[in-house]
Image (cartoon, rainbow, N blue to C red):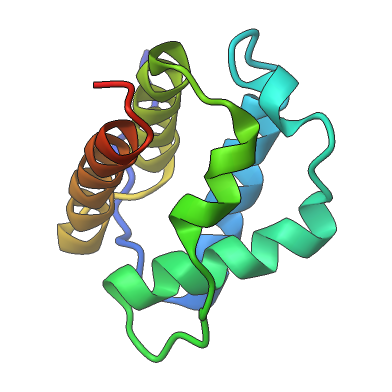
Length: 122
């Protein structure tokens, strides 16, 4: 028997923390993504990334960084985006459903496309 579909949408900062903790737990063991996260201090990073995504779907964010600038030193390749987007989507789908969950997935695709273009890895 399969697990029932989630019935709650991403609506709070707590939801975003839950999502980001789950995503990074999986990313840290993903063979493609893990090497890019080896040096990442999750205790410091998760609140920052939660603020970023909060601005995307909830509003009232205090995020003031430059997402692209943070990713430039990582020397990302197409394979990293090809692993990140599906993992991000699976993490959302396993926990949330609704308009905000769909918006987050759509924005992740857009961000990946923009980053790939701006990093010259179309």
